[in-house]
Image (cartoon, rainbow, N blue to C red; front, top):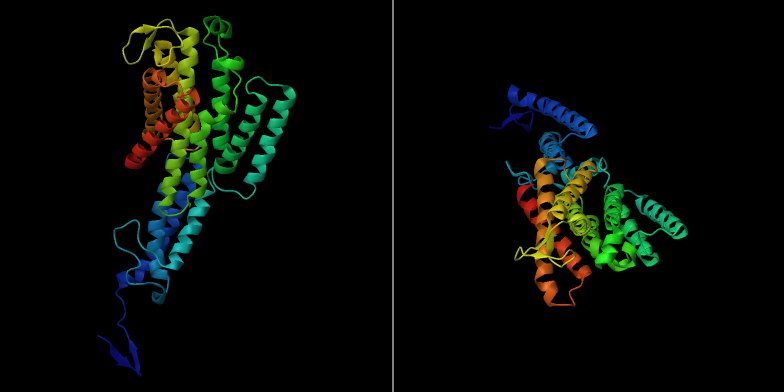
Length: 359
């Protein structure tokens, strides 16, 4: 009850436990921030999203005590709900906090990244043009430079080096036992040099995931979808690398090749054919690129994230073999580049769906 004191309406003194609550919350706030900062600096297995969630909950409770009551609504925070409605004051502070956490990772936005992307990829294009490299045609080199600029500007060095690793491994695999492949008539055209159709057939889905990563805001529920976009990017690249290794290693070292739909022995290079050597190389390539992406912090270095990316990519390569043995053999207009786009899209979609349910 209110009581009158010199013409003023005052409230009773709060209990001692209530008076100690602000101090306890301040201590919890400081401890949580110090713990989260230490974990982020040591690059432990705790993801930035998890750190942000712990930090947000403690900080929100603290702000409810420190902020004046007039700046809070009765429905500002729903108890027990992580996606609580916040006042403009708290929303602004949470957005700034998430931006600070986001800057600890290589794919965080940066003001000078676009310029760096143009300079680095432009220099590499000029170097490749002068050196007459054989991994890409001249047109393919120009398109690869455009793709590299897009990936560096959107995902930073992590996305760019992932794509570079894919190019290096796939180029080496394509040139293995090139003479034998040419004798059998199953070698890649132009001596294995990639043209624009090969560049975008392999990386169109990855480029789309990179663009989605830039387009989605980095706060609130969209931060989760940004992480899934990175997962889709890495899975699409791993899918294409696995498909390339399965094909090229199978052509070069495969003793027996079988049609995936009937398991009948067929000639090497047949659409939809698989071999034991190619399948092992496929799994190894997928695992290498997945581990590299996790080490680059495109995805969390955790067992569930690694499994989702690897299994989705490997499943997509098997589905691609089925498509090659059925649809591609019936419809000549279904080119290898179109199948590559479909293949990488299947891998990315599988990873995003499973990741949204599990991660």
